[in-house]
Amino acid sequence: MFPTPAKTAAKPRPSKRTLESYTIKGSDGVINPGDAVLMKAPDSSKRPYVARVEEIEATGPRGANVRVKVRWYYRPEESMGGRRPFHGSKEVFLSDHQDVQSADTIECKCNVYSFKEYTKLDAVNAEDYFCRFEYKSITGSFVPDRIAVFCKCEMPYNPDDLMIQCDDCSDWFHPACIGKTIKEAKKLENFSCESCAAENEKKVESPHESTGQSDEKFNTGASLGHKKWKHMNHKTQEPYQNDMALVMDKSLWSRNDGEGEGAIILDEISISSCM
Image (cartoon, rainbow, N blue to C red; front, side, top):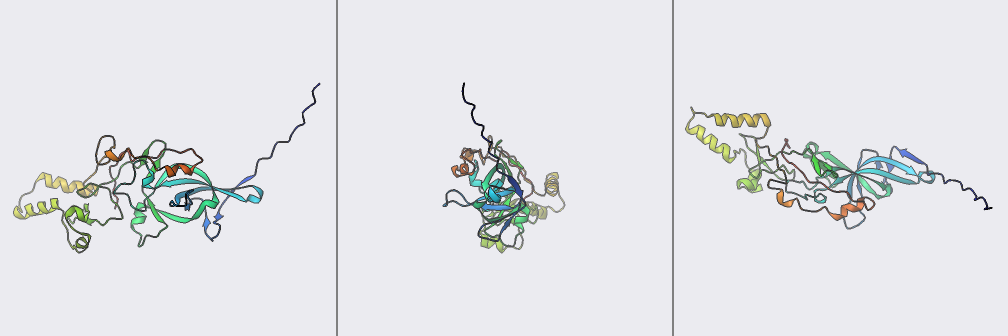
């Protein structure tokens, strides 16, 4: 007859409780769910990651182990499509990539503004960022998938760049695209783009004549706010066809425990007003 094995008591699961806030160690900064934060990268030579705190929880004896559930913001260069000329230096994408990290990795709070809020700031500080897209890391798409283009180069608006507005059609232009330096552009009191200048010249030469084409142009501009709307499907059209093969920055894979998730490309860019 075999001896009856001794019964072992099941180990109690560590208690877990949700916290309403967390005070960053070494500072008086208080973090709440919904706040944007900078989090230390595993490689100290890299910039901190940007994240939005979704939940704060404490486990262990007396809740000594504090962890935060976060939703990562991706920088443009961390996406598959890479950084493009219209991306601002402080632009980030709110992704669907979530993770749980130790609260000790939080460096400080930061600010992630909407695009409209960011363009109205009197000064941009080191901790200021802006977001105009959500980033779907599973499907490889952006929301919204349409963005407005401006100027003769037909590029979306980069808030870091100076642009000049045409007094007639209200479209916006880069100084270099109209043959001006930034210094020269800042001195302009009035500006008409090449197309509108030609139209105005025709009106002066033939003040009693008008064309349906001219009327349609200005009606379209009034209804849309901007004349140019464009789909830029990376599979078929320029200018983004050639940069779609870029791979995601491998540093991004360290954000979860070895299970990297795919990044996303802007599948279709058309345009809603950015100004």
